[in-house]
Image (cartoon, rainbow, N blue to C red; front, side):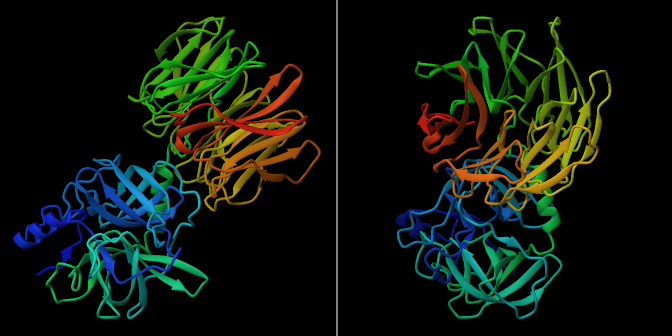
Length: 582
């Protein structure tokens, strides 16, 4: 007889549980929770509770990256006994991940939607991407050494216990390793009360090195469930899926499947007819335009469409031109008349896998976006043309590109599938682009600007630092340093002749702000307040003769938060409405 697999547990009401147990037909049995003691207040906040739509099932998991959870593939699979048949993509039903439920009330911690699931081809293991990074919980590190015979591991989960069907807080217990195989680990509780129960599937088994570190070793996969509420089995022990040898595979999947770690890097704001215009997607997936003019209140209008991700805007031929990725993977295109009123809408083809960026160079309107096949797609339109052209500049692209004109060359950066900062450039009179890379360790989308006769690039590193590259006008090799840690999202940069400015969402949900003067060598840093839930967009808004630094970002309740800074009176903040996504 095999150990029974832990399947996502049904969140039954009390009467239904009694009926099901009497008949012995747990038709919606689900993965289980560790039958041990509740975790200490505030401890192990990286443990996630996964809840699955109308099926009322639940599993456990662990945060291993600000935007990724690891769990059991059986929780999502077409065959819940094996997890097989699971394809990479959105979950088949609405799924949420809840964190931090370790307090006495059980109400603390964020709740986020799952947007992508990636299953391991051979093990009961899946990675799930969240709609946005978790701001204030440190991810669990992946162990790099195999578990040892008799090693004691800590297990955690949200499944049932010996006395509770639906515990509202994470429980933990100690288990000893009884066997180590190529892909699995056998464990048994160190006390009679320790067991792995329904609802714990995908929960972590980890080693603790005193107070120094915690390392993920394995995930709960199958158990005899002795001692779990409602079970009569007396046999003990459980089977775990090994994780310690999958560090490279896990990092590769995170890089390759984080295409909208952002979203987008394109310029979402532009100046036209003395108005600042900002473009974004609302919660109905409709393109919105917000605009403001000196002495007037901001205005909002809908431009229609069914879009995903973040739009990009630029002024071309005395028109405002906007691009966004359509829900069907097409490059959607809007433009205004000379009066700034919406003039038309068409599409420039399909096959997009990410959000566009746009710029104007040498009379060309130029757009870049990651294709669904991982290529850097390139569109262009001359001033006197009515139909666009398209080619691609090669593959291996994982994130959204950022582009700028430097030394009369169109210059593009994007995160590669190997985590490197990929770099392309095309000179003014050239017909073929060049390509190299500027090193690895990149976790998010880059942002770029020209400052002090150098091209400058920023991106979030895999260690949560703000990575910084620069290349002088007459140089051939880029330089690199970092401006500190605590970065959760993608940065946005804006430059003037005198100052380089960068914004990013911090791991604590604050709007982090860095700046570097023209003749300075060390950056400064502060923050402009909290409540930030999305990536910022920074721009410079000229109001008369005053240059105003302006930032937009999503806040709590899908609000559009707006900050502005002028030398005369410092930083201000207000809100431009709700229902804003990106």
